[in-house]
Image 1: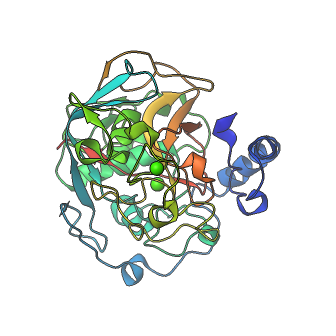
Image 2: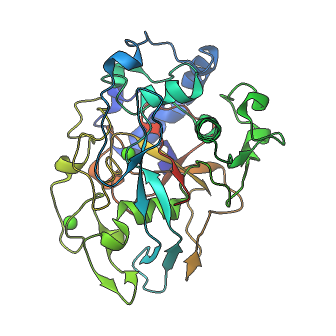
Length: 345
Ligand SMILES: [Ca+2]
Ligand SMILES: [Ca+2]
């Protein structure tokens, strides 16, 4: 039931509601919310904000190279080195991850519009503007963004749906469960953009090889204990999460411009909070990773949901940890969920 922790597009009404009550609420309202989303034809039904170009500030940070240079919203990619980490309390449960690069921030509303040309589905009442992360992009829509960005940058698109890598062939982004879109295949050797795997997300969130904490024999042994991405001491409880994350207690009930909180050790912003981030992996509840050593693990072969990570502007701190897992249906549009992208290094 944890995948239903946040009510679909009704965050304000249940902000302080305990988890079980929130579960019941989403079960009661989920059908209605979905029907409303479907009738809104994915575009959402909020009044649009001012044009993106007028509101988005160009920002280039340390370490990354802007690649989306032709739009008003450059996308900065940060290198994440290969490495290994302990993913839970069992020292035998290690994950090895190959090197990749990851967007410094969540994809913003301005970037969404610039890359896809599709309507911005974000719920305006839970957003401060076009520099905020895009939300209500379901998992299917995130794949469209990835391939469109790859094509725009002259890279090989990663995802194939309906035997094509061109989203123009895929048709309208589904707002209900779609077997064809669920069967999306990933070309892991392609040069283009894609969603992170859950293990890539976790490795990046804990700061990879430069993450503060205990590194022994090439394994980051306690990064999984971090209470938020950037937590300077995973072994010590507590920490200044509000310096690093827009979450339930610090957000004031909306998303905020991407990249305005302190970054983690890699220079990645908002890994904890602001919006949940879609990962590639299938997920079910209850569910566990396979035990033992895993290399470039890409998720279960089946599962009713897709993983989302990091918590959001709406969630309590315990949802924003490095190890916390959650998921949604791939077709879910939720104003607490967005995504960021990765690609080969
Ligand atoms: Ca800590
Ligand atoms: Ca986030």
